[in-house]
Length: 102
Image (tube, rainbow, N blue to C red; front, side, top):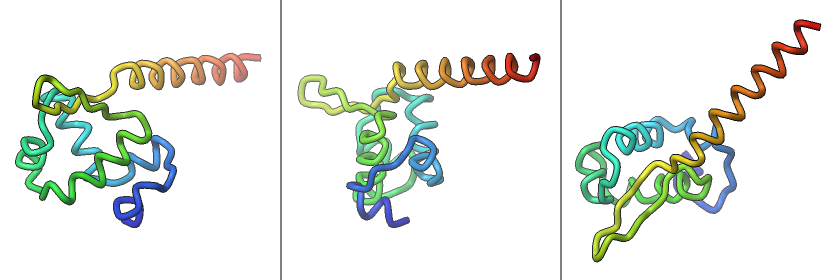
């Protein structure tokens, strides 16, 4: 769990999602977009301090974004990144299938 303590470490998307709490964070934000850090911590049953390091990592890889609405900071999953990764996976699969067909 060294990466949660040292959020400076550069991780790939796959590495960032290896931690179970980060997967729960993303899953919860997909279910309830726009939660505050406090609401997310409460929903997941973790401290804000524990959650913050994991959020920094998810933000650094571009998976989670913060949006300020008036005085409230809301968290969202980055839909653009998800769409880009999904398209990339489909194109890779098609290229792989084309290679097998030859």
